[in-house]
Image 1 (cartoon, rainbow, N blue to C red):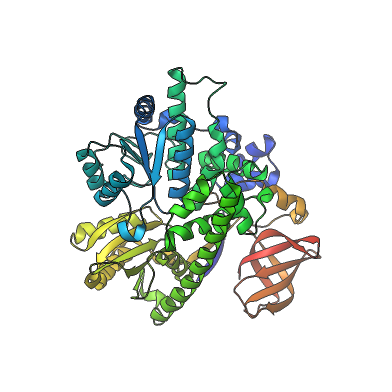
Image 2: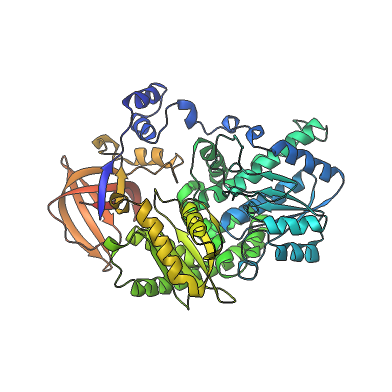
Length: 562
């Protein structure tokens, strides 16, 4: 079931914003998203939260500054998703700008799994001979890996944003806004954001030591296109601080001041960088980079982000595009299998979904979990075969069900059931024995039953209510497109009653509609639906500028119809 609701907002907050010069509709939209103060809407870098608020960041800066002075060799151990790849590229480029000797290694997820494991420490020592290992977007759970590095006399600096377990690794320094006692006001930094902050603190430390001054210091804001991409692609909450990072990165892309790899990815995806939006980063660039980590080797994605050779970047972007197409084919067939396996699934009797197939690809199960979660609106875990009788799971959740905490609870109730797990509220990964699938499935469902109420298992389309007739315009669409919307700061969806003038089915799959309100007619499209509609309809929709035969017109992108 799906129902449409309207977000409530404080009239007083909306009025405060309007009086400070914010467009009246934007004032209402922002107030409905919890914005009270016009200062929260600035996208200026000067408004960023200062690095000093991050626990141990000064210690990390001093340690890295000493290492640079001593010409010690640093090696970044990256993660294999888009956040990990951009964090690696930001770390590599930023540390080199600041004078460090630095290299990187990206473990193959299928051979080595996730995080800094003892095997990855071995591999890094063998191939790169580091004095210092820096983790990006991983490491907070790598207790054994850090211990293995320490035994070899290698210092580890952990930069991560994942939630810690009860025990922290014995690293030289840990910078993570989610570690205990860190008072940083934004817990929502992505891995790439944490690495960017470490670089800002390191540059300030080098200024204090007289290595640079304000005039000759490296310009770290050149890295913001990469920070924006990783932040959006990792689907972290776009709070006021993350919106600044993303807005600044997008501003650079629109001005054509981005790294060769990003420009090449825009071109490969057929998107215009001068109109760059968070949507492009999340749905066009991010998936192409992620595809490398899912099916092949993320080293290709990282090379795309670290090369300054435009020809090489274009060559890699085309390869990534091909891998992404292959990923889509694999995903489509896995989804068909999943729906067949769930053919008898009765949502009314289940709070969760757990599904496994022998033929599935480890690198794609997360996307399939996400699609199933969208379809059935249940916390979903999909499993694929691993090695040595183990299966690997990837989960996606719905609001109100903290996935990592749920796995933690299962493992506390049945300590032998989960071999290892980690993640966030909305996404997590785990490994179990193949023979324990049914037991795990039952234990996971038990948590779902106890945590989730019936109404939480209904999909809700949250809207911003009606839109005044005057704003069904290309100018207003342009104004909306100029803002940073995304996770936790949802793009506007409006809702109103219309008279249905006509409907026809496009390509057997989509509904093309003409709707009328107050004597004005609007074109609308509802993807993936072919229902026959009544004469009067309540429509939840996004505004879109649709270009056809050189003419641009307002079109309503339907989210749901009652």
